[in-house]
Length: 266
Image (cartoon, rainbow, N blue to C red; front, side, top):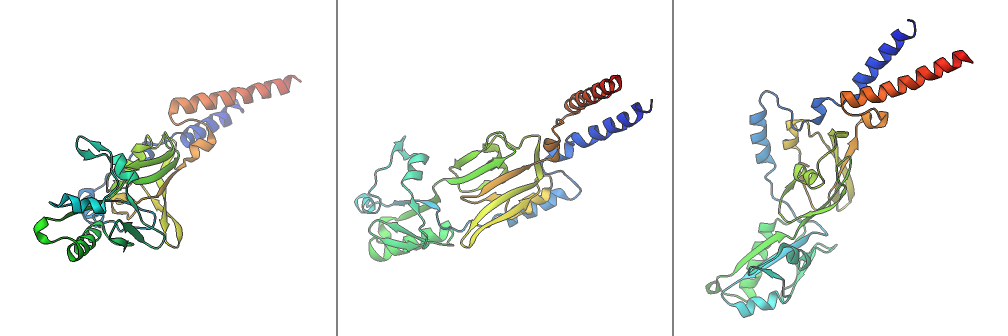
């Protein structure tokens, strides 16, 4: 009887400590006033991305003068249904150098560091109109990120380096690319490791709160690394659900009981 009481208390303690609660598995837990917060956050997060060193840009120049356009885009890209494929755009893009420049055929070097995509379009359009085209030739410039590359590691279903061919990628989309966070991943403190001219910085975001929408790290940037830390339940090794925890703990207690019985018989 003396042994049963402490064992029961120990069992209850481990059951409570080892199970992952529903709150730890839920994204953006709701509370009063959340809808208004989300609407405000989306507006705050709508700031345009500014180009950084190492970014890969896709630049498309179109005009009624096809021969003149060909001078600035001499590399023949693969076409799919008459349009360039996303993969060919990625490989035939313009990389931003360590000095913040891209080099366009004929036009030469153009500094784009910290410019928005719209600002780069305007700069190229202005230079072409001043030196090569006239307004009658209906010049049209499109500048995009040629694939957004990022790394996801830690407690996710499939760690790896991913590339999404779109201008904006939020952290949920990035995690979905890696198969989402496992049940043993810490959604309350996801790390975003971001590149800056002066080096890397680590940022934290709590994905169980709607405040995540208001985070400047909700939308990831090229070359970001997303790291999901493990919950303490993983280090305990007792399982994520009640049944898993009970099974693990009963196994341990059976072993302890066997040791005690054997020691008394010696």
